[in-house]
Image (cartoon, rainbow, N blue to C red; front, top):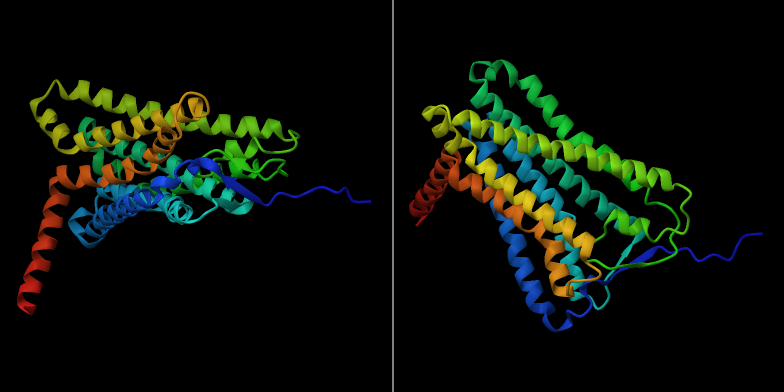
Length: 315
């Protein structure tokens, strides 16, 4: 005899409750922000792919960082824009798991790519004679495969822990997060996996963060001994430092939001803290590198000048 149990397949995202009076404005601002994200990231990606002089490790890693920015934001903005115009904000259980997977794997891939960029700058500045023997095409290919495959694999395992039958349907956020889905589960039968896998992932990427911080601190100390190294650091590493700093600040805000969201913050502040991780890094990364790195800036300006010449000839 089968138990009369209701299977919950649709979840409610209640993060937009209380925003009915300014949803149109929020929609317009969000569309503008998403268009900027698409524009700046696609510009950097197209510039690096189209300019053979930029087919170097640092720019290859940057190109993948921008691709990851597009991947992560694609998991949030289309759904969020739809919710702003919809009277109800709902998502299927499967769709919620997919969104959580995309957002989590994108954040983890950011860690991996920033760690690779830090290692690349470390070898270039601290081991310059070994650079070309260390950063070979084969090794770069292996690095890139690992930077994408490992986050996808670990987040897939993490998502599997969120597939239990649900006894609740309300997620008090504007997008899905795995640990909130887990909190709705009826049973804790797989609680060990739900604890061990996220703990391992947090530790693994915490080590990434520690490595990035140590690398730049070490390079700064190393560069203080040489005027030439200081110049090289300012030209090629300053964008990395700004990028890592912005990523770290956004991550801190996200962690604070998850810790204090339900008790001490207004809904508007909660929504902003939920979005900033998907707003500032995808814009700041390409803008910083585009403005500060000379080769990318020159390549973009040359491309724009070429387009301008073509338009003039047509007119």
